[in-house]
Length: 517
Image 1: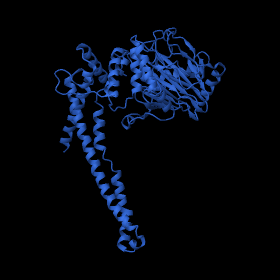
Image 2: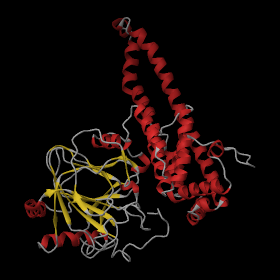
Image 3: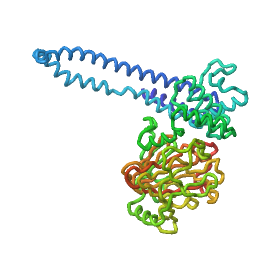
Image 4: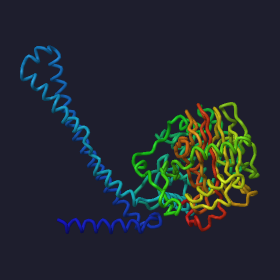
C-alpha cells in the first residue's frame, strides 16, 4: 500500500512539473492539448458531485413526503393521535433522533472531491498572459487571412471540422483586449459583432450600453464623428446612464456590486510580514492582509500610530487648500473642479477612453516634505522599508481631508499613453505605485473603490493600503482605476505617497511581458 501511494505521489509530481514547465500554453498547440484532458477530468469530477447532490436531495425529498402524510393525519386529531402510545413514542424518536439524522444528511458536504480536484488543477491553468496571447493570435489571423468578423464568430473557418461559435462575451472580451492595446480598429470590429449578436436576441451578461460605449469611442478615435454621435443617441434612447462605470461606482460605495468568488477569496491571506527579512521588521513584523487579488491590493494594519496621525494633521491643517489633479494634456497639477448636478455632460475623456468628463474631487489637501519634520522622513522611510521601493523620487506626502459629501471620482494615478507630458515637470517617470494611509475611521461612506474589478476597501484608522499602478514592463494596469466614495457621515483623513519609476530599476526590474504582474 505504501509503495502504491509513493508511485501515485511520484506520478502527480511529474504531472505538476510538466504543467509548470509550460505555463505559456498559448504558444504551442501540443501543450494546449494537455488542457483538454485536464478539463475533461474536471467535468467528470463535476458530474460525480452533481450525482452525489441529486442522491442526497432524493433522500431528503422522500423524508419530506413521508412526514407530510404523517403530520397531515396527526393534526386532524392531535390528542387522539398521541393517545396511542406507539405514536407518542415515535414522535419522541423522530424529534430526538431522526430529525437530527436528516440535519446531518442536509449538512453533509459532497463538494470535497470536486473542490480538491479543481483547486489542485487550478494552480496549473493558463494565465492572463495566455488568454491575452491567444486573443492577439486570433486578431493576427483575422488580418493575415482577411477573415470577416462574423465568419470567425460563427466558427465557420476554412478547413475546420470542429466548429466553435463565439458568444457575446467572447466577442466583447476580444474587443476589450484590442482596446487595452490601443487597437481601435479591432475594437470597432469586435464590439460591432457583440452588438450585432445582442440585437439578434442572444442572451448575455454584457449589456448594450457598455458595448456602445466602447464602440462609439473606438470609431471616434479613428477620426469619424458622425457614427459616434448616432451611437451616443442610441445610448440615450436605451434610457441608461451613458457611463456604466458611474453606476458601478455608486453601487460599490453602497456596499453592493461585485463580490469575490469563494475560490478567489480562499487565495487571500493575512500574515506577519517582514519584507524578506528586513532588519527593522525581522523581530517585529507588521500585520499584512490581502484585500484583492487582481489588481493585488494589500493592507497594513497598525502601521501609523494615533500620535503620528495627530502630528501629520497638525502640520497639514494650516496648508489645506482645494485638492489638485493632474491635467491630462499638460501634466501640470491644477485645482480640481466641483460638480453639483448628478448627471454629467457626455464627452469622451482621453484619459479613460469612456464617456465622461473631468475628474471631480471634493476635498482639501496639503503637501508635506521630509525636511519639515523628522516624522515625515520616518514615514517615508517606513514606506520604503516595507515596499522595497526608492522614496527619493517619490512625490511629497499628500494629506487630504474629506468632509461630508467629500469624494474623488474614478481616476487613474498613472499617466496613460494619451498623456505623453504627464508628470514631465517632475522628471521622475510615471507613478509606479500608490501607498495610502487611512488616518481616521469614517462613520458611513468614504470607501476606496475600484469600479472595473469591484474591489472595495473601507477606511480603518491606523492602516494603509498599497498597490502597483504599472506592470513590471512599465505598461499601465488599467484595473487600478479607483475612486474615493462620498463621505456620508463623519470626517475622513488620508495621506498618500505616489511612488515614481526612476530609482526602481534594480528594486523592481523591468519585465519582458507587457501585462505580467
